[in-house]
Length: 70
Length: 138
Image 1 (cartoon, chains in turn purple, yellow):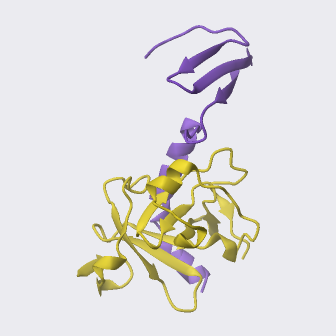
Image 2 (tube, rainbow over the protein chains, first blue to last red):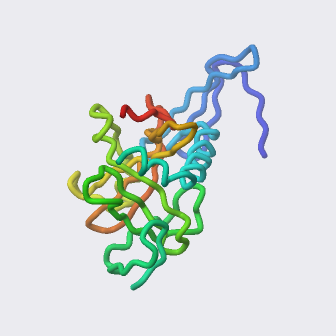
């Protein structure tokens, strides 16, 4: 993994059209601004695993949904 | 062709009704072929059944049955991938989960199906104001 040190207000550029800027940092939190073309999806990584886990959980107990929503 | 299903045992399906999820469904990435079936004629519920594994069967519903104001925009990439030409090509479903006697809908990750081309994808909304576990008002 490439590791870069950046200060508040500084950016990195990824490929042709993606800029990631450190807007503010401190107290263990970094606030990032992302400028990316509309076709590039920017997601919090944990959201992807949340969706995956929710799908896996959803196939359990489906009979209960049908029973409850009759 | 005949497939094994979670709810209806063996079912005869038309191959032209199979929906291809190129990327699979998150959590079930190995399975790409699904079929959408009514649970029963009087219900808002449908299921999306893998034709490769009978246990992979998710209960889905149209979000607008329960959340009238639900809205989002598809990205250009999603529109291109699913070969969507117009709004009427698209069916939208959300996955329901039962836990602790509550039913929730995943409003962050709608399943988008191009009903003309039979291509589907569960997308994840960016900056969504919605919840992975939105309780159903019922």
